[in-house]
Amino acid sequence: MASDPEPPINASSANDHAIQGQSQRLRSLFKDSNYSTHPKNWDTLWKESFTPWDRGGSSQALDEVLSLHREVFPNAPSSADDWDKPRPKALVPGCGRGHDVLLLSAHGYDVFGLDSSPTSLEEAKKNEKRVAEEDAEGKWKELYAPRRELGVTTKGRVMWVTGDFFEDDWVNDSGYGQVKNGFDLIFDYTFFCALPPEARPQYAKRMSDLLNPDGGRLVCLEWPLDKDPSTSGPPWGVSGDLYLAHLGHPGQELPYNDKGQVMDGSADTTPGALKRLARIQPAYTHKAGCDDQGNVIDRVSVWSHQ
Image 1 (cartoon, rainbow, N blue to C red):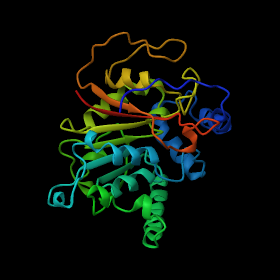
Image 2 (image 1 turned 45 degrees about the vertical axis):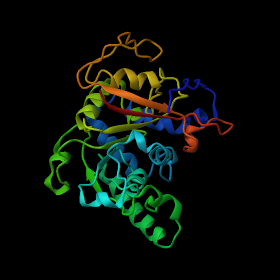
Image 3 (image 1 turned 30 degrees about the vertical axis):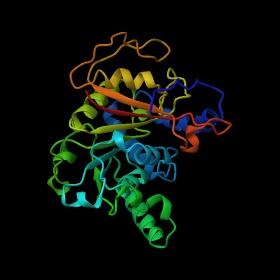
Image 4 (image 1 turned 90 degrees about the vertical axis):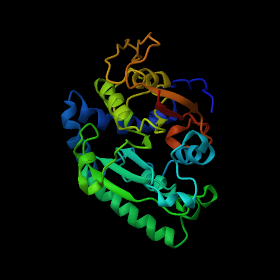
C-alpha cells in the first residue's frame, strides 16, 4: 500500500463537464453563505431530490481496502469468536442514503450513519429496507452478504443519526449509546470536499477527536482529484497534499496560495495529528472517480493517530 504519484488535474475532462451544471446549482446555493446555514441548504437539496453526489451504491474502493488490506485495520471484526466482545464502531459522516453504512455493517461494524439532513436519513431508511428485501431475494449476494471469507458471519447494527458532525449532541445521546474510546473506523467520501476551506482546520480537529487512538482508522476516498482546487465548490477540488497538511495539523489555520494549494512548508505536526499509513489507487471505484478512458483517478488514504 505504498504512496503513488498525484493524478493530473484535467480541467477539460469528461468528469468536469459532467459535474459542471450540477456544481453551478451547488455553488449558487452555497456562495457567500455562512457555514452555519449549510445543514439547512443540504436538507433543501434533499427535499428537491437534487442529489448529484449520490452514487447509487456503495464504494467498491472501500470494500477493496477492507477486504484486501485487513492488516491495516487492527480493530476490524475477524472471526465468529469475536462476537462475545463489543463490536468495533464505525462512523460515516454525511452518509446520505447510507450505501457505505450498509457496506460497513456487512463487514461486521456497528455503524453510525450521520447526516445533518433529516430528509436524507428518511431516504437512508428506505434504502436500508429496499436492500434488505433484495438481499433476502439473493440480489445482493456478492455486495451485501456478510464477509464469511473474512470470518465475518453476522452484520453489525446500523444507527441513523441526525446531527451536526462538529457538535457533540449526537454522540452523547444515550439513545445511540456511548462511543467511549472513539470510532474504530471513520469513512469519508464527498464530505471533506463539501466543506468550504475555512472549515478544514475544524474538520481535521474533529476527525482527530472522534478517532479511537488505539487502532482507529480514518479512511478517505479522495475526490475530486482532477478538479482545480482554486475553483469554488462544492465540491471543492482536493489533493493528497491537502489532506496531508490539514490532518497533520488539526485545528491549525494554514495559508493557501492563489492556486488553492496549502503553503504548509513545515514537517512538524501539531497535537492530535493523524499519520497517513497508506495512499493507494484502488482497482475499482465509482464512475465519477475515473477519467474518460475509465482509468481510476480516485485514491484511498488510511490514517491513524501518531
